[in-house]
Length: 53
Image (cartoon, rainbow, N blue to C red; front, side, top):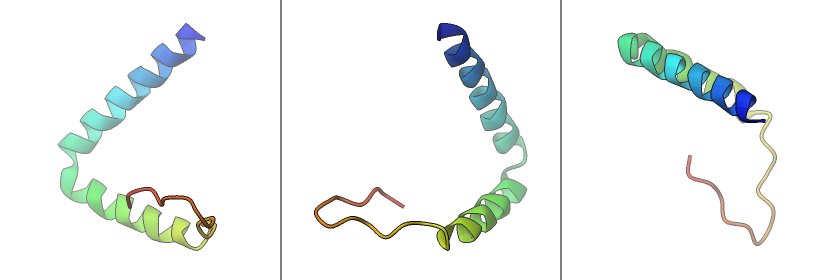
């Protein structure tokens, strides 16, 4: 399990660095991804706080 966590950490670090280097382009891509996923989101369940968007 520790190996998998280390792999995920490495992927996250690489992704974050690429996002820093390509900031203007990555913002557009993230917004398009969020828009594409919006139609597939489930409505919030009653009584639960909604996560920050």
